[in-house]
Amino acid sequence: MKWQGRKRSSNVEDRRGRSSSSGGGLSPLMGGLIMRFLFSRTGLVVAGVFILIMWVTETNPLTILQQFTGGGMGNAAVSEYQGSPEEEALAEFSAVVLQDTEDVWNQLLENYREPVLVLFTDNVQSACGLASSASGPFYCPGDEKLYIDLGFYQELKDRFNAPGDFAQAYVIAHEVGHHVQKLMGITDRVHSMRGKISEKEYNQLSVRLELQADFLSGVWAHHAQRTKQILDEGDIEEALRAASAIGDDRIQEQVQGRVVPDSFTHGTSEQRMRWFKKGFTTGDLSQGDTFNAEVL
Ligand SMILES: [Zn+2]
Image (cartoon, rainbow, N blue to C red; front, top):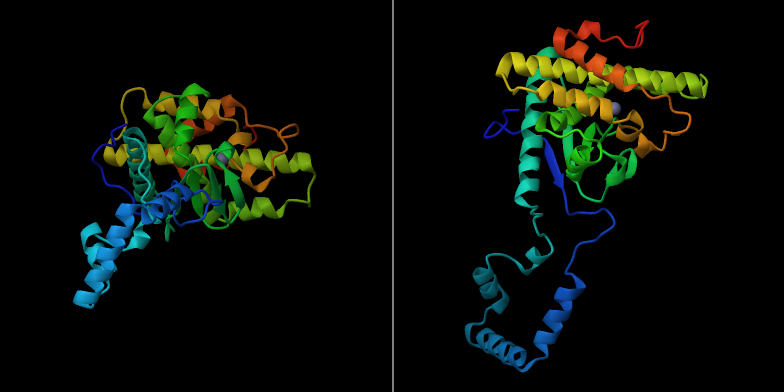
C-alpha cells in the first residue's frame, strides 16, 4: 500500500505507555536516586549553593533551574511515549489509513461522524470496559472509538500468517466498518435483540454483523483505490488472507464479555473473504445487506 508521506488523521489518541492500572509521578528508582543525591556530600553543597542564591537574589532557585532544564520539575511525570522506529512507523501508518477511511466515508455518508483511533499498550479503559491487548483490536459503540495495540500487527504476521501493510489496513477498515454500522443504527438493532431471541439466533445475527463489517471494509478499499490509487500489487490478497485468518471471536466483542467461544458460530473464512470481495468489487453500499442475504 502506498502510504508513506501521506496525510494523517488527527483523530488519533495515543495512550501508549499509559497502562490504565499505573499512576503518574516519579518512579521509585528516580525517587531513590534523588534522595541518595540529596544526602551525599555533593547534594549538600548544591543545596547550600541554592540557599545562597535564594538569599542573594531573593528568587526561587527552582525557577532558575527550570530555565536550564527547559520546563517544570513536573515534566518528569509526563514523559511522552516513544516506541521503536518500527512501532512509530506503524503508528503513522495507522493514522494515514484512518485518514483514508475518513475521506471515503465522509463522501459516502451524510453527516459522517469520524471515530477516534486509540493506540494503547497492555490494557485500556473504554466505555465497553477494561480490555487487554490479548482481546485484539476492537470497536466500542459506547464511545465510538477504535482500539488497537500496534503489537497486534506483529501477531497478524507471525500467528495468523497474514503479513503485509494492507492486511493491517484491513483490520482498521473492518473496525471502522463497525463504526459505520453503529451510525446506521444497525449495531443497536442487533444488540437490542439480545435476550429476546435464543442464544443461537443471536450468534447468527452477530455473524451477519461481522460479515457486513468485512463488506464495508471492502467498500472502503474500492473507493480509496478509485480516488487515490493506494493499492500495490498483491494488496487485496493480503487483506483477504487477514479476513480469512482472524476469527470473529478474536476481533470483536471479547471486551464486552459477550463471546462464548464454544457456542459462537463463526463466519467462515470463505464467507469473510466473499463479503470483503463483494464490497471491493461493487463499492456499492446497497449490496451489503448481510441480514437479508439468503446465502452468506
Ligand atoms: Zn468485527
